[in-house]
Amino acid sequence: MAKMWISNEGFDIETARDYASKLVLLACAYRAGIFEALSKEKDIAALKHALNADERALFIVLEALCALGYVHKRLDRYIISEKARSLFLERGEDYVGGSLPHFLDIMEAWLKLPEIIKGAKPDRSERDVEAFMNAMASRPDKVVEEAVEHCLKRKNNAKKVLDLGGGPGKYAKAFVNRGLNAVLYDLPDTIDYVKTRFKLGDVSNLTLMKGDFTNEFLNEFAGESFDIIFMGNICHIYSEKGNRKLIKRARNILRSGGMIAIEDMVRGRSPMAEMFAVNMLANTEDGSTYTEAQYREWLTDAGFRKIEIIDLVQKSNQLITAFLG
Image (cartoon, rainbow, N blue to C red; front, side, top):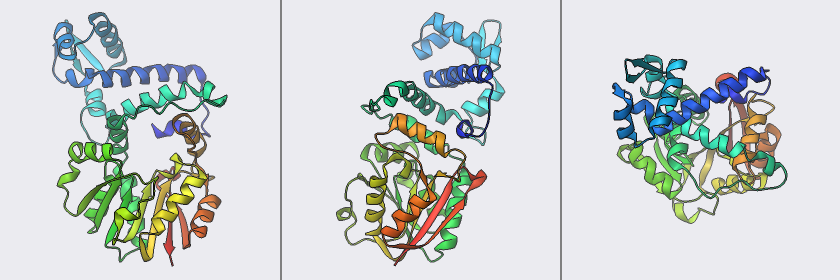
């Protein structure tokens, strides 16, 4: 779904509108539990009971899903199709189900852009941890592995890494798999969810810590220091001022010669950066995407040197690394 934010691709409005309605329908059906419930054949009465759903609504949605080829109907019974099974049930390379509830949350926020453009603030009263974490967990493994590989090429003697705001732990686990000890630091409700949902509590050499990195966290790591501090896809959530503070806080718990690694969409290099900034406008108080020059300035002012920026897979994301002292 990231491709929808590549800004230089033209599109036909009528076709896009058709695709948008289909995608929303699929996302709603997934969130309602229809695809999982139809892993085995059911008639509408059985499905109504399983989902505690409305019979009329089920009929209309199921028939539409049949017309699109995501559900098959035989006599009066329905079952998920094979193409839908790989997309929404089987957690292989084609799986996108985990990202769909978060997509609906994003679209709900985007519909408030007219008011936000006129000065209203995004509604952040509720935080759907489950939807957000499952969307983050659907990040392609090859992107994660590539970022970790580059980090360890630049800092090949690293033994301990801090993954700030690492959510579902894909990066932290990738570092652990390469022989490092890792600490995953995130909000309490996030840690509680990922500990059980993604079984992170069972991963050897991975420590889970609860906290808020938008506040000063030096005391929480008293006596500890790290070879690498990894910040994956979090800088776009915050303002320039917020990112300056975060980078300085990270510096304070890095060992001398330690490395900071920032993965994000860099304006001027990522074809997604400008459109993703609109997503941040709709979903955050002061987030955006930033240029290479901005990242270099923040890092230099915080005392980092040997700054390097590389393009990751398909240039959609960049990895920025720099050394302390």
